[in-house]
Length: 436
Ligand SMILES: *Cc1c(COP(=O)(O)O)cnc(C)c1O
Image (cartoon, rainbow, N blue to C red; front, top):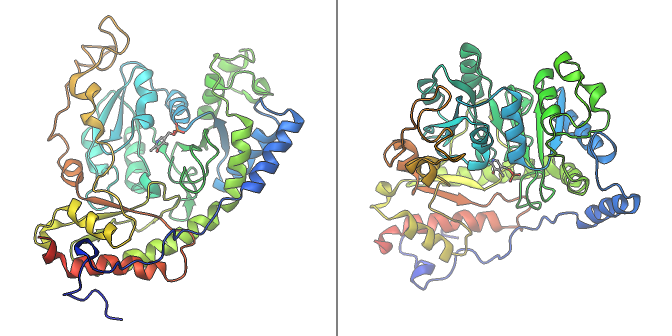
C-alpha cells in the first residue's frame, strides 16, 4: 500500500479515512477481581482503619514494589503532597519551587501551610521542570523543590538531587502519574527525599494505580515518615509504637488530629490495579516506542524527549508530541489536529495543560487568610510583598502552550491499528498543503 503519498484526498476534504479500526483499546480492567475484594471487605465489616488489615498490607506491597523504606497511604494524592510538605518542614514564610506547567494540587498543600509557590520554567525538549531555572530561583527562604513527573516522564533527577544536596533543600516529588517509572534502574519513590502518588480515577484512564480516590507517600527518611504519621494519621493502629522521635512519642493516638487516612475500599481496588501495573506500563512503553519512531520521521512532529537515565511509566494524560507549524507551511496546530482526527486517529490538543502562574490567585494575589494575611499578599513572615505573575514570565512554557499534541497511550490496541494510526499522521503531513 502506498504510504503517506502526496495527492491523496484527506478525510477532512471528503477522502477515505486512514483509520478504519474503531475502539482500538482492548485491555479491560478486571472488574470481577475488584468486586470480589471489595465484597470481602464489606462482609468482614473492614471499612475503616489504618495500620491494620488491607490498608497495611497494601502499604507493604507498594513499599516492596518501590523498594523504599517507608510507605504511607492517605486519602488523596494532593493530601499526600500536603503531608509531605509538612514532613520536610515547610511552613509560613517559606518558598516552594514548582514548575509553571504543573498542577495546583501538587503545591497547594504548601500554600495552605503558609508557603509561597515560586514557579520555574520547563525544559523545551522534555516539558519537565528545568533544573537550571530551579537553581536561579532559590533564595534563603526556599524550603522545598517540587518536581512533577508529568505523564510519567521522569524529571532530571541527577540535576535536581544535586541541587537539593548543595543547598540542603528537600525534593518533594509529585509522582501522581509515574507509578513504576525509574531513574537509572531505581524506582521513582526510592530516590529523592519523599515522593507522592495519587490513586485517583479508574483504571486504565485514571492514575496508573487507581482506586477512585487515594494517595501514597514513600520515603527512606524515618523523620519524614514519622512527621507524616503525626500530621494526618489519627488513631492509626500501633501509631505510638511506631514513633521513635522523643518529641513525638509522648503524643496520644490522636496525634495532631488530622484524619487523612485512605478508605480501605479504595485501597482494595488499588491493590487489584497494582497487579496489572507492570504489564500495562510495559505495553504502553512498547506502543509509545512504535508510534514515536514513526512520527520522528515526519516533518513538523517532535515526540517529547526523555532523559537518558529515565524509564517512563504510568503514562497518565497520554503521550506528548511537540508540533512545529513552521515545518508545515505555518499550518496551525488546531487545523492539524482536526485533520488527523478526521482520519479517525484519536488525538487531542493543542495544549500543554495549566500554565500555573496565570491562575487568578497569582496574577492578582489573594488574601488567603483574610485581614491581609498569607503568602500571596503583602509582607508575610519574612516574605517580601507578593509580586504578581504575568504573561511573558515563562517564555518556554508559554511558547509551547499551544503546540503540544496529546496521543493515547495504548495497552492492547487491536491488530493493525497502530499501523493505521501512524498512517493518519503520514497522510496529513504529506498533504498539508491542501489545508493551507
Ligand atoms: C492527580 C494529581 C495530583 C493529586 O492527586 P489527587 O489524588 O487527585 O488529589 C497531584 N499532582 C498531579 C500532577 C496530579 O495529576
